[in-house]
Image (tube, rainbow, N blue to C red; front, top):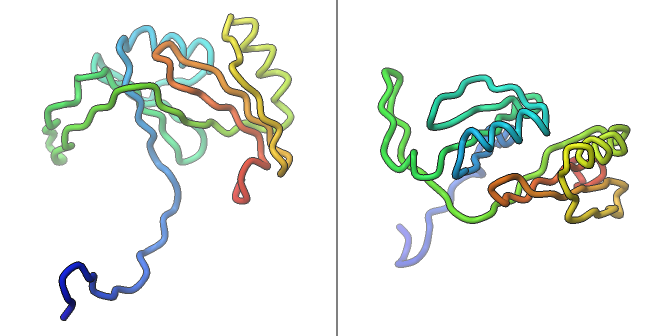
Length: 149
């Protein structure tokens, strides 16, 4: 038995394999898709008027949701997805090969995407920062940013 405010002792949780999905909320799904497909070259796996799912590397999915369109549960034959939503500019990073950094800089400039920042990390990685049309902070990062990347 535990006292008030105490938690029972349990074994360590099972391991986590990775981040499978990252979700962003956008005001205009068409405008967002034009950016993610035209600038970042992502290809939709599935899309409708409410959302779009992109493969963002091995085992990773980037989801764009129309802001406010996911505030009700989604009922499907397979089960129910609970409601969710978000507001404000968020941040996420996409992994890129170290050898592609100069190409990405030129590619973004050619498409009129302004870089807001660059960090040359002590571990050897480099991060480029820019905004999507909904002011989310997008980071392109080369290996050496984190001990596990």
